[in-house]
Length: 316
Image 1 (tube, one colour):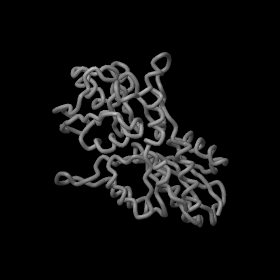
Image 2: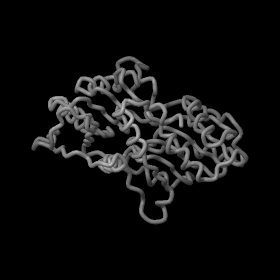
Image 3: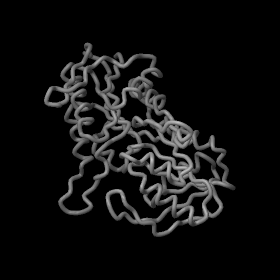
Image 4: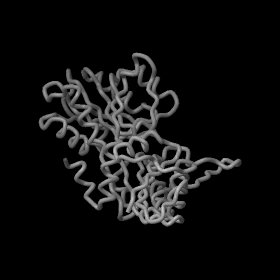
């Protein structure tokens, strides 16, 4: 069974880089718009009997989801043998539970849509809440960006005498401990205790751990408005922290976020290319270090195709 890789318009560079590691090219497909702006999809080659992968992050607007869903539907109707949705960033994941009356569980809905469109398998990267994996069906694999972020952090010369790994909130503490252990077995961990006051607003209640005169690796899953990382940085600096490096998986940035980061005390942002990102020009470009997930995705695609374990990728 041959492999075919398709992609929409969100991040063709990531798909092309992934295919480079696979030793192949992205398969042709037209993903455009009708005159009324509805998404139009047409495959450019026969896919009968192939193992098809669709690489597509799904940030807002919702058209990104429709590109993914219609590509899957086209592959199913064209008799692809197996279809895997490779979602490097999963949009609509913020409403992941019914925490108050009269709200949807949006990620459950999109998970059901991916299954209904015809995906046999789903490959995800660092979901906002790991428990929501179940919404995408039984044949779902979850990759962790630590595979590529840990080596990038080690390049900073991190040692347990001068550095501390910091979880951005209590919910990130366990994963941050895993990051820290892989960077250095003795790297200490601190936790920011906070409460959420709005969609992208939080209030820091306490910092648990010793950070005075230390350099900090501040871990979170994504940056959107940067209000959280900048607010955390102010609190940590006030508590005596020295250098502060933000380490995240997804840069799902709103307008003006880059400028806000450049105007803050965040020395460096280390992130993956799960979403397209245009760094600032000039010397300020060094404030962002983008590490590629293309090889990681290629290894996962190859393992899925060969019916091998994907788990082994983040246990190595």
